[in-house]
Image 1 (cartoon, rainbow, N blue to C red):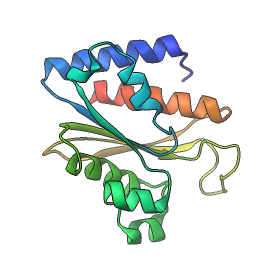
Image 2 (cartoon, rainbow, N blue to C red; image 1 turned 120 degrees about the vertical axis):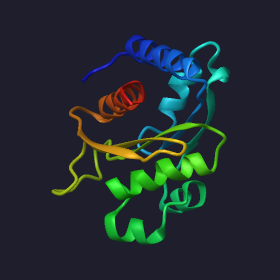
Image 3 (cartoon, one colour; image 1 turned 90 degrees about the vertical axis):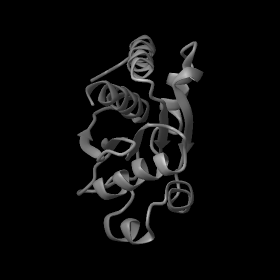
Length: 162
């Protein structure tokens, strides 16, 4: 799944229409993408109608403070885990006025991978206020930029699919 900037912009436009039609707003909780999802959606004119805020939480401490990820979750499962992304997406909703959240955590590379969690391993979570979180594991190929770009595309596509 390779996406160029134009494809990401088009996806963001579709997300905006989707959220606007439903009178919903979005919060992003990003780790491996470093704010790229928020940058992409705020690049769309009129996004203030449907984008609430974005949180970039790279460190364990930031994930705990900004997104209410429990220290036990990070110790037991690590930051790149289903458990962590579910807590991230839930914490983003608690700490924002948004009705829809997307969270991403992964290993973009080139370093940081392991046998269990190779470079390109990314968890993405989505949740609507009052609903249950859903999380999906992805294994993206390519360099750091490519992994991050594919993560942004999958995160946005998941909003449309949910």
